[in-house]
Image (cartoon, rainbow, N blue to C red; front, side, top):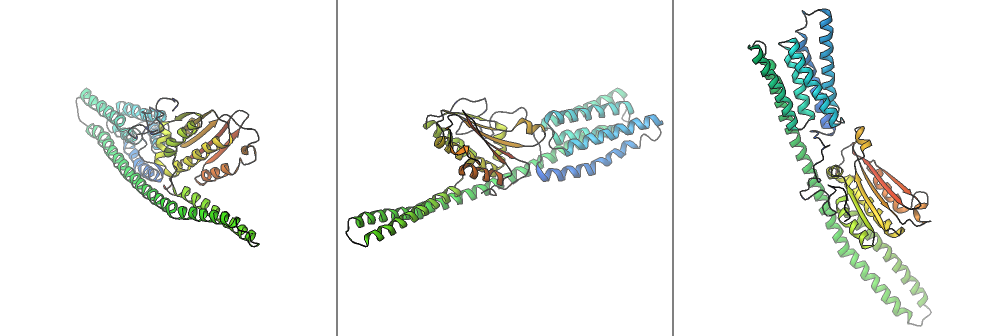
Length: 418
């Protein structure tokens, strides 16, 4: 394989030797829960968490009007920032870190300036950190809040009104970490069950495909051989009825050929062509035809495809058909296979996986010059659109680009795209 960027993996195992989607991606932060389950839990957190803001409100009744306005505004801003962090799963790692840091600094400042009772607002910092940051980072935030509280106690030399301020954010933050870990575990179990179901479906499909090939396929080939033999013998017989017999035998042979093609297509539909299987076979197939292949697969994109089997299978079909078109309809000497998550989509919080196949050696007047790009492209477009994606064909004078883009905004079962 032509060398690609670090972490792109090999064709045989694009995700790395341990199946962990390649090298560590520093931009990848854990999102504990995804999809509808995350939204439900986040809404409940906000519903039951915002009433905590009423606790510090009880300490501002004796303050002056100006102080009351400032304190109420600070509480409202902290509550709004906390709600955004909890509810918005599309925030970037930098946005999450910035929000948690702002909450932590604000909580520490409010506690130091306003005194006993205000330390409970640090609960918002510790729970937000536990929800949106990796476990180790969340523990650092919780430890920082606890350490600042202890330093405050040591400085004042009294426990009056401070014990609850110190313990509550730490205890609730640690409890939130335990909740997130439990949710992660249930999500892992759910995905493993989906993988097992997908593997069972795949095994059954392969069994049916083998049975079709071994029984019906071989029988049809035997019939075809017999028809050809009979036609050869009939051609040597001098009889007025032989032309009619030969016509009938030709019709039978044509029907058997059609049936054999239908069986092959049925077998192809039952077999799995996920993108990881195709990454093992397509580069070697192209190289066998003297096409230099460069594979560039982002670890994060491969990880997303492992989490969405139906999308992986659809993109596998696109890669297979695209490579077939490279061999049939071009004089390619080089090709590039790119699997990525577009930065423009990540910036706006939309998880999308993109497969790009680029080759040179375009033949003028090929089938892709026609509107629609030919029946092969129509079949690929149909498969991609069935899972909510788009297929873009871009022929030019010296290259041909095939781009399949699929959003991951909804969860799909492993066999719904089949």
